[in-house]
Image 1 (tube, rainbow, N blue to C red):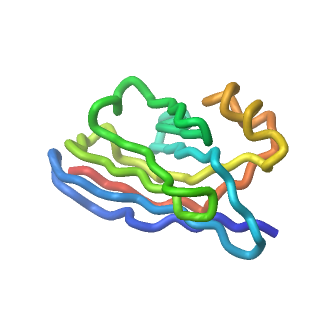
Image 2: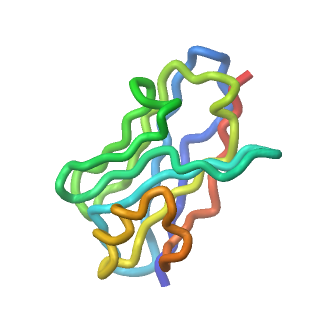
Length: 129
């Protein structure tokens, strides 16, 4: 059973920075394709960023130039560096990953990935105020 675990959330003032991390535990799991979603109260879930093994990335328009998604290798954690944070960035941030056999299909479907099998973390709270 694969479990994704996020960390790094917290409370910051507008203009501040946070770095989120996501690691996999509970199984020998590695993935070159992973991503971040966020959920704010009263708002729809948003696909924030995703990356895949060939260096391709997806970013939500509102975070381009401020957030950077990265992953050094398949077995290393996934990171989301968030700079110039704004109140609209407030929400619970979830790490999400495909089953390995569907990683290309998953990345091409981003952010509409929830009809596919996914691993999803418990989330970490980010508050900007």
